[in-house]
Image (cartoon, rainbow, N blue to C red; front, side, top):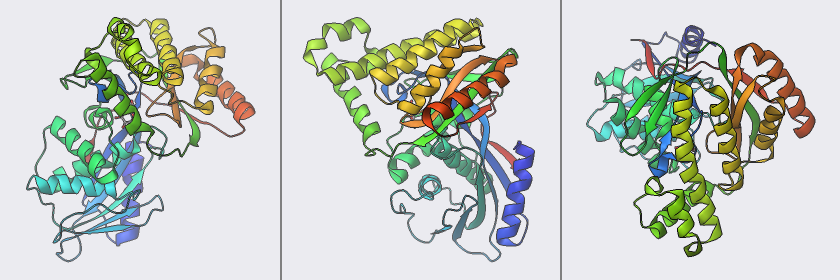
Length: 391
Ligand code: GLA
């Protein structure tokens, strides 16, 4: 659905649920990360783009003046209510409304009280697909609250407020990539983000002969839930042993020299991060130069490192990457890798635009044969960050 179609859709949903038209409509995109995985919480670089998949929210003041916020999701989740006369506390773990609740709490903490409102929320970002559906929900909520309170936040502060909501209300100790790109995405550009200085640089990706192909494995492995925090800790352990503030300050040489001072798993985790930060900087140079084969090789190298050293891939992701690699540059694929946190979700490939159809067909067929389920494949141009569609 285009943003125009989404606007009509969410308006109709609001009307259906609350029996009047909405006053405000906002949207925030999901993202795909081209390269730079598990580097954000190590002060490294990431290179994501916003995608043409959005969370949209239609809202209005309630019929009568109240301090109640009513949140209705079209995705079948239970509606949630917040009472602003009381402190906003997290819902039970796993509740979808924790994302908006955390953002509302962040505004209140800044003295920005939106007052009561009714909202209908719809999303085309696949849930749990590694495309940052949660950041899209947080950032769209923050964008709505900016409109309602009339106070536009500085974009970096806005992203950090959303990240804090995820830490404190959803309980995920995520880095800063997802919220940054959902706020700061720019059409036809990737965002090279230095997660230490938070400086950003737009890298044009506007060559019509290359396309970004996103393939959803349609699996999400429910592991213990501690994989992400465990890896963060392993990175911190490695940095401590190396005597540096974060792995951003380490080099491959330094790591090799300290190899026997750390356990083998910690060593491999650090090797991934140090290599990935370097690959991300090179990939940005490759994109600026239009050197697609080099960028593609870096993407494959990133995948193998995530699979073997960081151990966040899975059979299904590996299968898509293998199929893409077997198609090769001759068949139009420059490179492919898993994207996002891992353990399922999506892969991202850089491909020749005129081969998109043939590649999609081959990947879909071979994936079905190998794994036994369907994959969902789509192309996205780099999209703009959060926007107000009606105010
Ligand atoms: C998740 C987190 C991000 C980042 C990625 C891995 O998407 O939310 O902050 O750490 O995993 O690169």
